[in-house]
Image: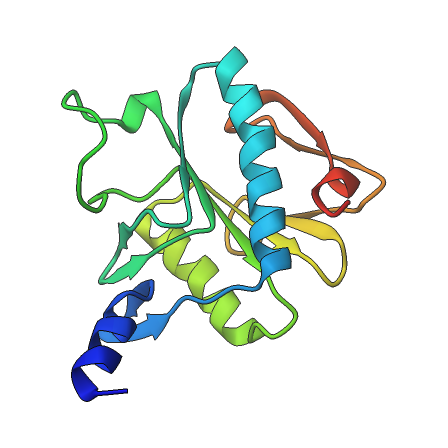
Length: 171
């Protein structure tokens, strides 16, 4: 492969910009499947309750000095500007950031991302654990609720009335 061909290939990858350094955002098939299920569940809820908009993992948000791409994100209508969704990256943080955690993710990087989200103004972060089949709902960097496969995931703070059996995300 020529250097030019390799450069084009590398530029086609999704990156988050963290501390001025590009970090490749790569995920496996199971990661994508779980993210899609979260998107479907939230999408069905938002069709019935049009309180905001849902974005997939290709959407970039300015999170402090970093540019992050949550696997799934939600922005409430109260935060969407009059001109609507931008055609480039969001200059505001999402209200909800969902990260699907893969078995090879480094916990320190994941918790750094959670802290970054809250510092930028994200109201809630969900960490969806493939390995444990649990969802960790952060209402703040130190206030965490854990939902197991046998429980219904809820978010009365942001998504009143939303319910999803956690096990459905992993089936």
